[in-house]
Image (cartoon, rainbow, N blue to C red; front, side, top):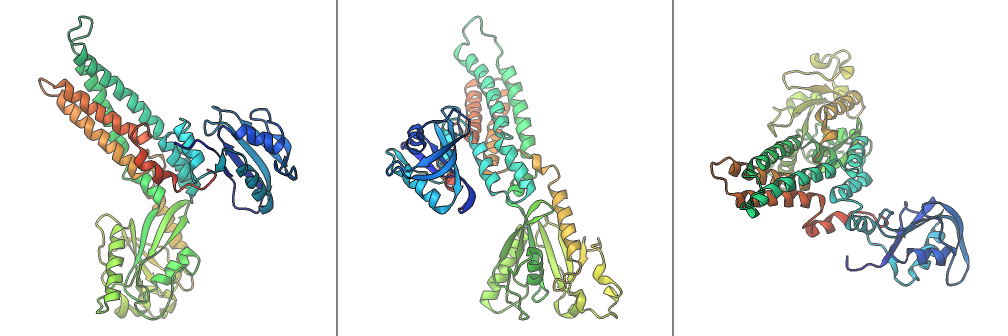
Length: 462
């Protein structure tokens, strides 16, 4: 970054709070400590200190002060930290005092982490893991993000890159020193062996069914069905709040509404969609089109029917996607008379069951009967879906693109080594392309176009 000002920010939660952490990073961090507390504590040891306003000398607070000299700090620069009482007035006074010090300014979102990246404290995949850890909503997301922060993909990509450089060095030695007596005649064979091994390893990492990306973003579950089947009521029951408007009038839901849930420790995005039927209303037609489109993207479709009015609302369940399972949800069982054969005698307590539809669950979204069984079934579905997914190496589309580019270049290199007279210059170029793709993955080269997008989502002070 061109601007190497010393930056400062509140790095803890929104005040008022019990404790507020103010962090300072840059060449003026030492001066900032001296101005505010009159001394610099021993490195990495907390010291109790009185914080004063440098301009007036007035005491602001009593706090713990910490000092982390470069390069052994989170950002790789000199870092100071004040752990204050978390009142609004205390924080405002300390930030105002820091702003008055020449060369210091308020940090931008993600700027501390960006400096850590630029100073080699984190690679780009670890930065992304940190961002995912901050925004993790479920235990499974937290575990995956923490592993990425600690180098799950970054360390592996760097190991692959070192092996690629080894293979490239062999090929380039053959090109540059082919006339030297002490250079072995056949250097292409060992380079080809390394290349084939790397291609196979990376291909295995890619063959994960996109589990890592889906765990990061959440499973997509679409609630679909005919109008007035109780889709919005079920949606609200799953969300445990009034997230969607419920009305006795058909066609109330026009657009797709979504809510993010933690079900069984796994992330799940549930969609409430418009009732699917033929309509002359152009607005309702658009709602039905959107409902079908989102259901086609879902990992699971819940097809809701009103069993209290079988002839009116039950219709054949459409197949939105060939890949996603479709479950039948028999709703409004509380309205069914005891004489109804399908649900007579205790139907409200019937457990979810497999049948000709694949899976059927009977419940009353209004009364809540049978909903706990649906929750349990959804949790089991997520658990089965993500089996082994938490150890997936690839967790973002950017990771997948970089590794796919790497594999494509390695495939071309392997193909070239297999011919009778391989062209060494082409092999070297493909290995360079593969090395470059791995470098972009970890942020070693050519990543300026993605940096702003990554860091803009971080909070100020991180």
